[in-house]
Image (cartoon, rainbow, N blue to C red; front, side, top):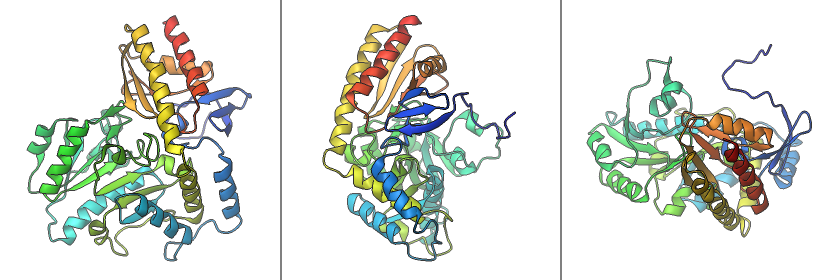
Length: 389
């Protein structure tokens, strides 16, 4: 009998080792990892450069309170602001923490401007921002919210890509729009660029904050450091996590100066946020991603993946209704809710994937170092599985 709280639908497979794009079970079985810890192991498992940097730091300093200056933290913040729209960075340990920071920063900013009544945040139906009470109040699905009432007030949900619905929700109490440019947990839906452009225009005109949640779609997955850079729409805030630490607990909330000025000592914090180990890993991951050709590789393999998946939809129209997504964040929507069956059978064949959206979408999120040959192996397994249905 397990003594672990039953919060996860666990598989019986025990994973004990990882190397590159592969995971290995306790029994020695080898698995091609096309889940990457839910978009997390961006550089694959046990990347030698990142592992080496972490080992160096392990012998020097693990933890240091944020009442002191942490050099690696200063360095990573400087690099991220140089590479993005942001002027300041708040480091924390998970995407959920980054969500909490974003919500607090939004409300604190308007409070600091003498506009405390402006505290409502518009979010998008199908969005997912974490599992705290604030996060499930902002987004999540019915299952994640069930049994946790009362939820927090102050969030107004609107349908994705519906600009009229968004405009109708805006009032003199609206502070911000908080959204995922690509909804991953919600079924791998990409928000229309024209819609996002209009949202940006509206938020600027109304003096509202626009915050992008790039916890899953950001940090290289779509072929650039952040997806907003692909579509040319700059937010005022951005949350990121998962891939930023390649599996090490690390997240960040990127903000413009005018928002950061409202956050003064004592208004927010994180015990482990920005610790020396995490910052060393964060800088090492960024070193690798900034190497010449890295993002080009992601774009090229992404194209290869799409080119091999699209014929499956043509071959099995009675099974697959749509293949969608961007970069290395792809969803295969099925016409019948048996994604868990496909995912389970693929695991037996040595391929790891996940499923989302009420069991109708198979989600594919391999490490960013994946090669064409791995894509071919995965698509061949899928083809054979669909043949047997």
